[in-house]
Image (tube, rainbow, N blue to C red; front, side, top):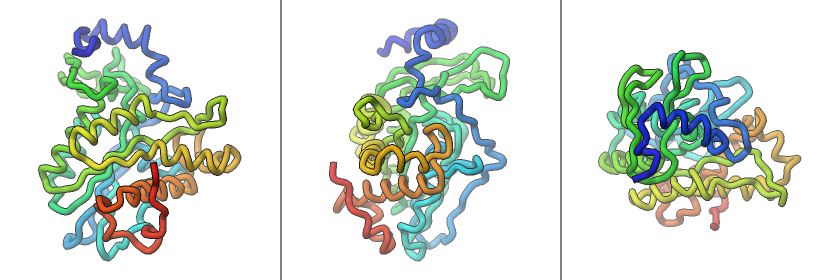
Length: 302
């Protein structure tokens, strides 16, 4: 059992506050909870354009789809790489959600109602999973209750009253939620593809981008392997791309200090997604649906 699973909620929260604040910061330094949560009422839901076609569903956080002016997620820049006459692209990602809250808010259940055999689901979470599991009252604009247990295990933490929902909840590990998406997608006959989270604009002393290969990137990979899903190491693909073009060229790809991309950055990352998919070779579930531009993207070689 994970040691955090043995803690009751008050002690667990105190432990987080006193001892884990630094660990909850992302690789680039700023805490994940500095980012806003998208208003679901304003975000809306993308729909299929044609019911007779298979659908590529995209789920994730604000790095995949964002409503903040000047920012852009990679999920909204995938369309040019696909043939709209052969497949629907539906981006249901939404800012501020973790692998936990995308599920508990019912967003995944809504997709499952429409998911059918032959569909593909690409998922990317992790940026918001390092936040608080729960918080003390009162509720403010900065209150978050979206964190997951770090890792890929089966440990749990019981929350007697979620500060945002007012309900009790059993919170699980990041890997558990990813495996849940994989298993339920496969049960519908869809093909799940797990992506590691995109890197932030965070350079180390050696001039390299800091990876998530020992944290959420690793746990995403493990969850994919355990669940029998395909895996695209987006964290590594993009990091290599940033290092190739250099710091000065990377700066315009971001619309904030180093988490959310500009339109140009979103296009860069969307191309990286397609590179990762092409790198799957004969296992690429969307190979037959790519446009000429998509087929021309070089396959990622690990």
